[in-house]
Image (cartoon, rainbow, N blue to C red):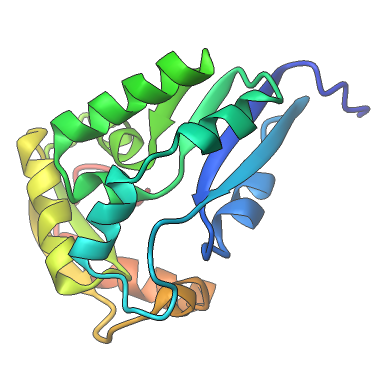
Length: 192
């Protein structure tokens, strides 16, 4: 099958130390689309990514980044850092998506908002939750879901503090094991 690259241009704002999102997006890329990345900063690469640091990233000025990604005239712009918006709550997440849409002229989705949309699409109200984040961010993530009508009935964390690169160095088996630890006894929906 020949790719035409005519279906859509997808712009992605990605934290500058994230090593997973680009390869994952390439694997998930729909046919005939192109993906364009703009790296964003605003945090200290040498610190463990705690709540304050991720909240700071979410609140940072992304005007320059939006101008850069807008240069490809994207059809959609994705904000690819879940913890940067969920640390502020659902209203902030929705407002950031609207800001991105207004400044880029493209449909906009955030990672945290998309997580909620996916769970609601499955009509699930109770979930198991796991992540490589620090405990404080996990608590905020579960609160973010609760504010959206989704209860966390089982939870697991990675069990150690991972730095910026450590999160990206988890193997697929480690990620699967972590997800399995959080699987509720009677799941409402399949694993995401």
